[in-house]
Amino acid sequence: KSPPPASIDGVFFPKPVEQILANNEANSVPFIIGVNNHECGLRLLLAMNITGLQEGMKRETAEEVLKKLPTLGSFPSTIDLLLDEYIGDETDPAEIRNGFTHLLGDHIFVIPALSVAKYHR
Image 1 (spheres, rainbow, N blue to C red):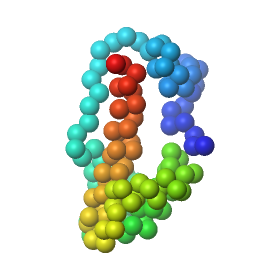
Image 2: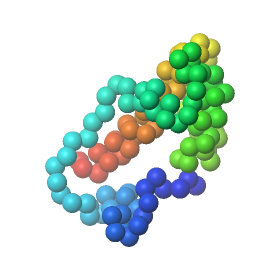
Image 3: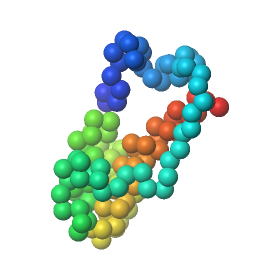
Image 4: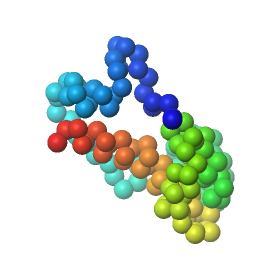
């Protein structure tokens, strides 16, 4: 099991976020949840110290990076499924990089946004 992405400190997060949302214990204030079609660009990859991105990347590099993420690293079978979905049989390094940035954007921004939105129906 992967560690929670937020720190439960007893003050700001008194318990897991999912539990707060499920029990409708969050403050009732209006807010907007939204994403765009390219949530994760090269800046995030550069911040992760992935070099040589102008030329693209290899599938193996994408796999290594995903294995190091605390939220995915302990699920190797999931990583294979994600790479198959976002990269497929692509061999062009630029297209592999582009698919990888879309994968990270969905993982970091889109899926959490949708998860929070479902509690606010």
